[in-house]
Each structure stands twice: as C-alpha cells, then as structure tokens.
Amino acid sequence: MDEKKSLGGGAVFERGGENTAFSKYFTGTSYLKMLTTEGVGIGNVTFEPECRNFWHIHHKGGQILLVTGGRGWYCEWGKPARELHPGDVVNIPPEVKHWHGAAKDSWFSHLAVEVPAEGKSNEWLEAVSEEDYDKLP
Ligand code: MN
Image (cartoon, rainbow, N blue to C red; front, side):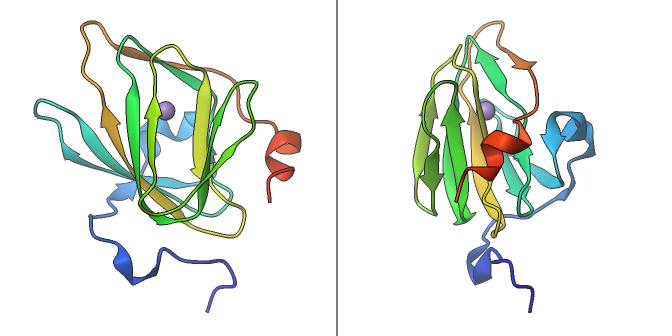
C-alpha cells in the first residue's frame, strides 16, 4: 500500500479525468469532474498528495468548498493556512486571494461550488512557493 493516505472508501462522486484544462494553474496532478453546470456549477476536484492550485481570485461571485475526502489546506493571502478534513465547509468571498490543495502526505478532494454572479471570472496568479508550502505539516 502507498505510504501516502488515500481518500479511503468514502469517495462518493466520480473522480473524472486528469484536469488538463487547468493544469497550468496547478502544481502537481489534479482531477476534475463537473457534476453539474445547470444553475450553479459544481465540480468534484481531487488533488494528489502535494498538489495545490496557484494563488487565485474569484471575481464577483465567490466559491464554496465542501470537503469530501483526505486532508488538505485552504489559505488566504497574509493569513495562516486552515487545515481541512471531510465535512469541512469553506466560504471563499469574492475578491479574496487564496489557494487550496492537498497535504503532503494525503490525497484530498472537495466539491467546488461556483457562487453565481453577473460577470463572474477567475484570475489566476503566481504558484504557491515551495518554501511556503513546505512549512505546512
Ligand atoms: Mn478557489
């Protein structure tokens, strides 16, 4: 068995294929399955250990993360990272610079709910530095 923690047997939603469309905004490999695009977009995002997205901002509409598996992190610019576990809910307000992703030793999955708003967009910024990520337990 892999020494890194898996998502366990509780994975409910389809993992989907490798998230190649957004791979240029991720460090490491992630998987994406859009569960619905009607009304409210909801995607199932799965991160391999050490995988995280770049710093980014959701403009106008925010994002809600519903953690479904593994162990991971949510971090807002200038604040300490918040450790995430299944059942956790993260409300990301619009215009807040942040990243989310897996812990070093664990796969991680969350549903990403796109909060609807007129003219919403995502702005992708720089990668999370190795130095900052390596500080996390
Ligand atoms: Mn986000």
